[in-house]
Image 1 (tube, rainbow, N blue to C red):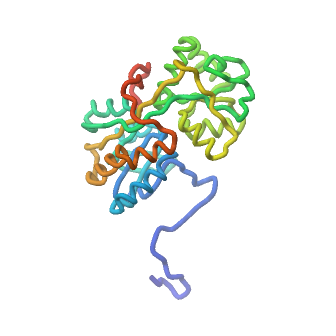
Image 2: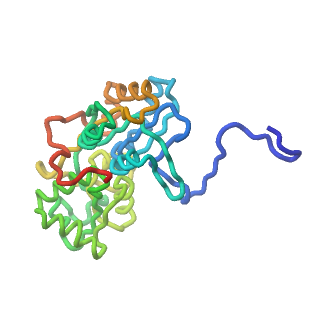
Image 3: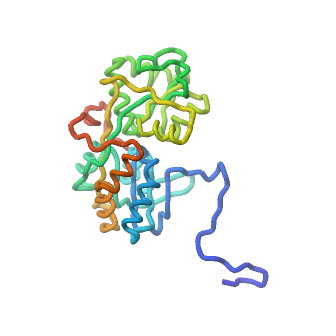
Length: 301
């Protein structure tokens, strides 16, 4: 449209404004106002989503515009309950069609009648991420108590992985060990709690701000594929924990039921399973303990 003698013709599409280091929001994707499907996906799946949605769109081209978030489950749950997410001065109000998170989180939401059905689709286990070469020789939870080790811990109140990390550390080191790592050492700055561990823990280690941090095995595998100078400490049998992940249609807020059903079926089907396997995830593991025994209250409160 011509608006003046010297004005350029406006091309269709959004105005693009990018200011490096000031506009980076890595876990929000797509158009929050206009989309065919809205997904709330816990951060544990962040590295999968590009490949997963590429395969999903190939199978269902009619649902090409997907808005999705890959934030910690505690943040997603609070966003659902409160109806909005605020990032700086920006407020985003997107009701989810589908949520994917830990099995226990989905069970909690079902009790609150956000959804009636959910199914497990993948699982993975804990590991400890360190710098390449493991310069401090960390081999298990007990080494995290050494005075020279600085640690990033996922926040149990925000992040599902934090529940299992707490459980594993308490079993290995006792309640006093958890208090030492999570409370006392935080007071004098040796250890830190993450808000988004899948972003912060690897970066803090690379920056030299911490020496180690528990993550999912799949996150460590992703860092290795990306060539980051990091490696995983394989925990001995009995010291790790398995996270079980489930997804379901959020009937209370779902605006795109057909697209939501197609996505859930795709993730649970051979196409979705293949993508998750490529990223190191295992299938559902209903026979193993997951979040149920973790000593923490509901996420997102």
